[in-house]
Image (cartoon, rainbow, N blue to C red; front, side, top):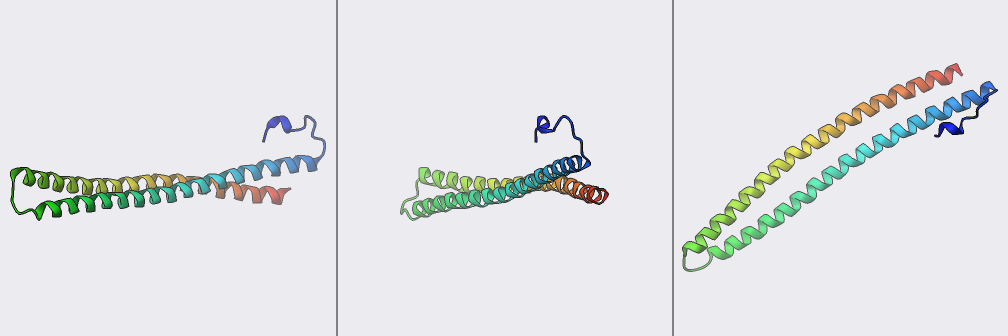
Length: 137
């Protein structure tokens, strides 16, 4: 709402009441939108986590398949053993990434929920004030 839209001369009590109600309603709607956005961000973060885990698991499976293929060779060479060792290290790194992602997911969602609680509290306070204002008007 733009304050230029407010008439310069508000004569009637009804106009003042309507204007006040409109301002309060817009504030409430704005808070509700913020709450919806935060909830959406939480869901998107969870989805991102799921997709990341799927991708990491695919990579891990591919690495394991390569290891199995290398293990089935008849002759053991130092080069092949070295490659297998490096690939196993990659699997460990992927597992470390997964652990870090779990922690980051928890942090991100925790922060979003903290923010969400703040806005929900503010919304409830404004709704309560709106009810009181409606009773007075």
